[in-house]
Image 1: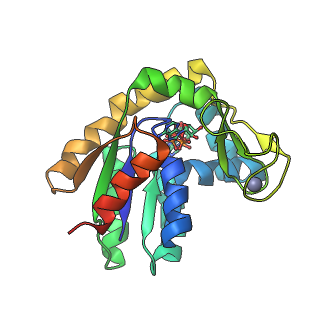
Image 2: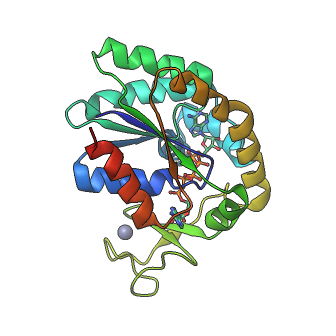
Image 3: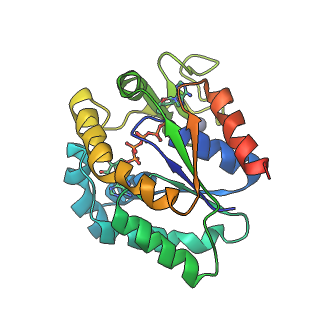
Length: 215
Ligand code: AP5
Ligand code: ZN
């Protein structure tokens, strides 16, 4: 199965993709994670992307499509979860070509329907484990033992530089202007499955499972 998780910043794409990767062995392909890795490594791509990401704007289609192309083959056995990609019509077209070249197809585009105001709270409260990347939240998902990662035991946590209110507003405006308009492109192909992204993490997961296991 190859699926896209589509929704505005903070909709829960990363949370659900990580869970699908852990439970089903599918491979999470997050362009945001790839770009953050490139920034951390100081690669040429990272140097270009850093300022754009800190403003909350979109990195160029050419850069992110190339990143997906580099990582796609690693997901050929078990399927891919596209998390944060595609984000523009151009990227959607690039993905179609990348998949077709490999004889693969897209099975579902899962749209996480959410209330944008609630997302600001979600995003501004989140943090991750600095070692294994497990996601946490100040209000909704604290580690079981204070300041110790549930997954790997690390005590090193971090927050993203673009998780401040002003940048979040820009990221949402970018979503509305450039990403939401790709929904009709997939709707025409009968691929869009809209789910309630405001439900609990477990409930959203159950909705996704029903789609993946359904007929
Ligand atoms: P990216 O990393 O993709 O960020 P984003 O789309 O803004 O999405 P987020 O990671 O913020 O949110 P999410 O939907 O994954 O939610 P999460 O699961 O973390 O992109 C960052 C930047 O990189 C972009 O701004 C752009 O500059 C660049 N970029 C990336 N891809 C690009 C592309 N294709 N083209 C161009 N530029 C690109 O959840 C959020 C929080 O809520 C967490 O704390 C979580 O624990 C909590 N939570 C999750 N689900 C629930 C729930 N059901 N109930 C309560 N809390 C929940
Ligand atoms: Zn950890």
